[in-house]
Image (cartoon, one colour):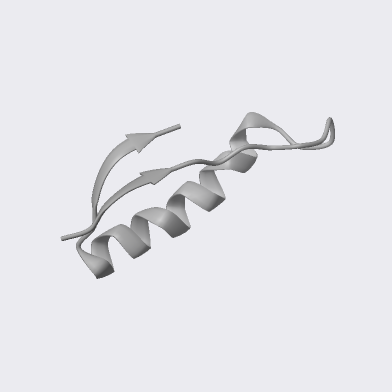
Amino acid sequence: MAKVALYARYSSDNQSVASIDGPFRVCQEHEDREKWKVGLRV
């Protein structure tokens, strides 16, 4: 089982904090599929 950390950010004033949900959702799907152990979500 791989240990991983997830990092997501938004980089412009045109984005909102809610924009981070998409990248984290994709990472969650990978986590489930690859059986990762996420130690840190930033």
